[in-house]
Length: 109
Image 1 (cartoon, rainbow, N blue to C red):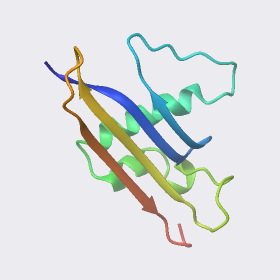
Image 2 (cartoon, one colour):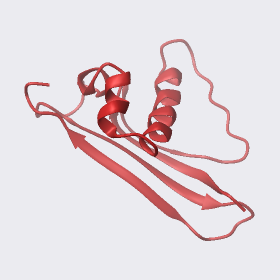
Image 3 (tube, one colour):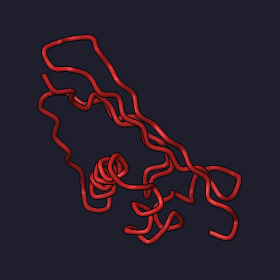
């Protein structure tokens, strides 16, 4: 059986300062306009692209790290940006895999 996404961990990604989202079957994403649904979807796209492309190119496609990171949280500039995922298996199997990264831009970026 193929692994599935069990949770997504976001740290300063676009409009989302910090969040851990647990997935269930099914999972629905609802909210009013401007609540971060598109940014959440972009986090999933970002993670998928980062698995097959360099981080530099994934950031470049979105306009650079300054566009992607959330600047409203954290007291130090530039704030770190992180994404993580926990993968599991269907049907209650306990096997898990974790993938995560955190980056920090220099003051010039």
